[in-house]
Length: 110
Image 1 (cartoon, rainbow, N blue to C red):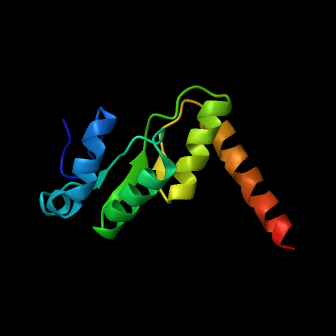
Image 2: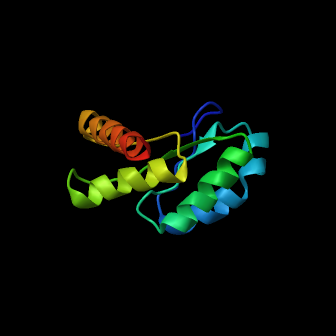
């Protein structure tokens, strides 16, 4: 059960757009945030994250999956979309991967 200080995390991808679209109502209801699934289309995820954050709610993703190419792509998609965090079973690897990506991006700009 979600209390007023916890985000609501839909259990199916089809629930996410309706929840993100009702972000203002969620905020008025006292919810802290909404958690869309990160394995969906990148543009859709970015749009949902923008609406959720724009309503003043926290936005953390879920559905990353196991460590490997697909899981790595999902973490990168969540970060690129602007999510404030995500749920993973391999946090140290995810954090290291994102730090390496940031260093590579910085080096490419120099």
